[in-house]
Image (tube, rainbow, N blue to C red):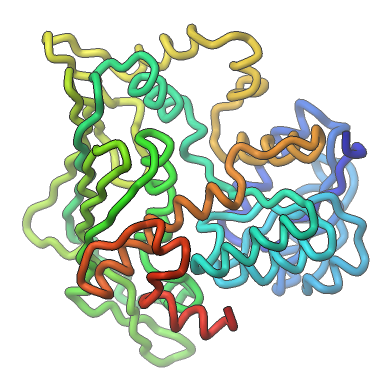
Length: 398
């Protein structure tokens, strides 16, 4: 067993880190002696100071503040670091932490490219440390119940086909303030890899491994941004249509566009041999609580009912493992999983290799569009196919 309290740091104190900090607070309320946030690191000192001040309120001690990762690692004896930086820094900060003997939890997508992710995995193996992917969506009651309903209860029989489609016109801010996500070298891509990382992990969780991807990825309209008083282009896609063939034989169609004028629609449904799972949400984060299981005999089972059935099927040990202390928020659960993995020296549920398998689906979409043909996800993981990613890898010396 690792020493307690665990000594933890948050690296990156921006938007998503707010949710992580709230997660640590909720875990601390249940297990106040299990960990301490001893350091906050962000290149903008004011943000790290704000996080430290907020933590002191509920923890009773104030984390030390750093603006450079190197200084943090030299000064602190850390058990773990929660890395919530822009995507291009995930592997740079992650490898530095791992080489210093620090376990890491890294926000999705785990690396800016497949090679960046593999650098994290290799460092974790080399140092014998945990590298976990911060993926929150699959941990929710709806997703857990959907997995159970599809694979254990088999309400709709054998899954055969799914559609996750959205078309709409999403007017951006006319001023378009520049953000690092606009730059391919910083973000790795657009929504396919950003919110899409959740979807790619969820479909693996629900349906198994994706074998082949064929996709078209397009930018139909220009979306310029303002950076330091000048206009810069946004190279991210505003449209994609992808056909995914799974190892099981299931076929899925995943499409999204933000430039469809005059008529909007969202279609989210999985068809099986005995019925359908119909969702009423978005193409990134479901299934949602309003989803319905429509069976061939005319029966309709609301998702809320299936969640209750699923929870009733769990033993006390299983319930505590999936929803410790009754937590149902995915970010709280991913933070708890990381802390518990360090404390008990067990693997996390979603390690960096799991994160890589999900990420590779998104990269396969870009690679297919880049080369104009279907690609194997396994070939993307092996590096045999990396046309889209090549210049990003070159930019970061990978």
